[in-house]
Image 1 (cartoon, rainbow, N blue to C red):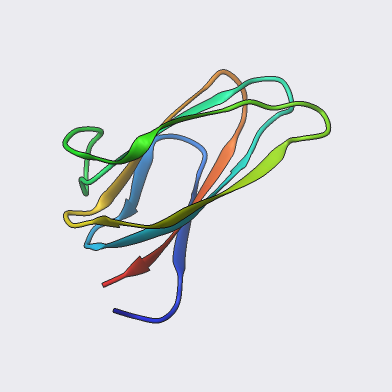
Image 2 (cartoon, rainbow, N blue to C red):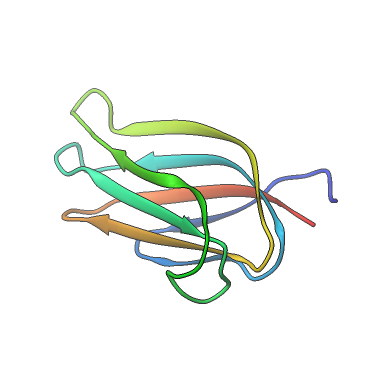
Length: 99
């Protein structure tokens, strides 16, 4: 395994990694009004298959617009796809280590 972290910043659902690795951290930035729902799938191309971690709902406020969530190296084998649901603008950074 590589000893550095790779990442992808998404504003809509999409692919984070096309191969195996470990999810290490999630950073979510919101518009301070709308909550963000996230699902992380062990899949390189779609929101289907096994979930890497349980679904997350990130609430927000004017003083809490950016949240960092340690994920403790949850492994994915086929790739990593993040399904994002948000009524307003948001950014999701999924940091991971590639195999």
